[in-house]
Each structure stands twice: as C-alpha cells, then as structure tokens.
Length: 372
Image (cartoon, rainbow, N blue to C red; front, side):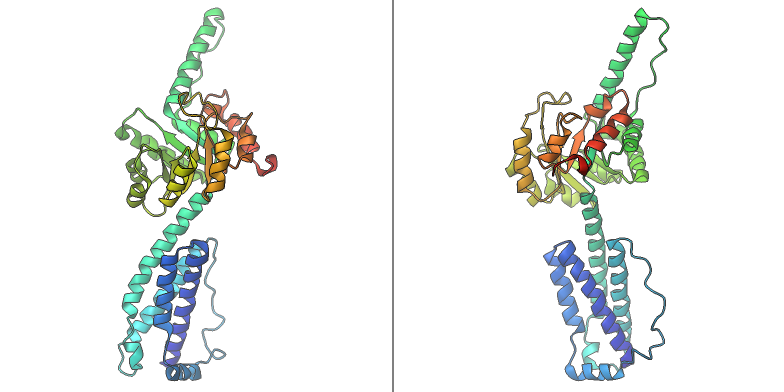
C-alpha cells in the first residue's frame, strides 16, 4: 500500500511540475503557474514521519514496472501537456481511491484528490488551447495574402474588357480564359508559398459568405496555412477559421476574445503606437500596420510610411503585419523596417500569373533577402 502511495505522489509531483514550467516559461501565465504550484504543494507535502515510511517502502531497483514501454512520441509541446496532465490525473485517481481505505494514513484521507483532478482537467484544456493559439500567432510571418472579393471581381471585369477590346482588332484572338474564383485564387497563392490567407468581402451578406468561407478554411487546413476572416467574428466562429482580423471600427478586441475559443487568434489594425499598445494590452495576437504606401485597393487610406512602422515595431512584442501598397519593388524595405509579415492584395490578385507573382514575393520575404 505504501509503495503505491509513494509512487503516485511522485508521479503527481513530476507531472504537475512539467505543467507548471510550461505555464511559467512558455506561456508566461502567472495565474496558471500559481494555481499549479499551490496544487503541487498542497497535494505532495506530507508529514516527515509519513515521508520516512514511504521512503522505507520504496523499491525502485526491484520495481517490476521499471524499464517498461516509454510514454510515446512527443512531437509538439501540446503532446507534452497532454501526457503529463494524464499522468497527474491518473495518479490523483489512484490516490483518491486509496484514500477511501481505513488503513491509509489520516492526512491522505483528508486531501481533496477528486477536486484536484477535476481542476486539472480544466487546466489541461486551457494550457492546450493557449499553446495552440501561441503556435498560430508564431505562424504569422512571411507573405499574408488578402483574398479581396471586390478586387477579384474588378480584376475579372478589367481582363474581360481588355480581351474584348483586343478581339475587335484581331478576330483570331481566343475567348477570354475563365477568371480566378476566390477558391482558385487561394489555391494559387498557397502554391506560390503564402503562409496566411485572409478573406475580405465588404458587400456580400454573411449568409452568402458561409459556403465560401468553409471552402477556403478547408483549402487552407489541408495546406497547413492560416485562414483569417476579416471583420466578422461570428463568421470566423461558425466556420472554424484560425482567427479574425478587426479594424478600429469593428468589434473591440476584448469582446471578440470573450466570444472566440481560446485557441483562435485576433489581429487588430493600428496606425499609431498608442493604438498598437492598446491592442496588445487587450489581447490581440498580431498588429496590422498600414497603409505603408498609397494603395490602389484603398486609395483613401492614410499613408503612415516606414517611420511609423518602425515605431510600432519597437513598441510592441507581437507579430507586425505591414500592408498597403506593398509590392515586389518595396517589400524588402518594409521587412527591413521591422515587419514580420507583409499583406498584399493587388500585387498578386491583379497579376497575370497569381501563383508566380506570389512566388516572387515569397522569395523576397526570405530572411536571406533582408538585412535584419
């Protein structure tokens, strides 16, 4: 009996300590860290006399379970959380059952093992979701393509008109090729190497956008690319997008954080250092900064330039996505100014070959092509 108690107290302490260190050093979450520390101290600490009895009963060398099968592969930090949470939960269950027996020391019968086990279920969930969110945040880098429905529509119309005009003077021209849909545009930019895709549509209703959003979500998921919905928190939630991007006139970041699951990311547009710091404090996961240059997509947008981008980069610790007029000719200086990612629309959606235009921009986003 004492050997079982000793082994499970050890397993419990070890599992809780791993979770505590992840909460402390990886997530830097003082609340979860302190909760796990208190749990570890309250459940593991025992009377010295009982500790001596447990140590006397220990037989590590003769343990028949020694050298058994390992704990399985650990490919992600989430796997470490899951394995150690399960280890601690199983130990708590064993201790909980043994504590019901009359021959077990009284101080163990008074421990709230069952309550701790259920608390640990919630901590495991929160840690896993927080790590998933951190992973998504870290993937906001490189080329970020905004699939803008209105830009695609204008591009289709422009190309058709251009080809129709050409046919008037040359009857041998072939009919215009089919233009890119949002889904095909997404596939093309993914093939070109884009790491994040955002759907932006200011005109269609959310009801109309649901099928398209789900299709783009599936395309991105299969390619391991982040999928972000612009403006609409409810649409992002309904279609299981990786996150949402909010402007200053959209739903406030804290309210969006309450609505979205903990593993989803929130981007927030900010044109000033003050707005960027506010977004960071309120729980945003990345900052969208622009317009860096005059943009054909948003000709009326305020141009803030590279100097403001540098100021914001120096003020916040979150990933910074620069947008507005970014193209092949200026992407290098935007990255040198501190952007972690560059967002483009016109530079790829209006290109004759969307995939190749994306590929060229991705190549310019390579660390070897910047002086940072």
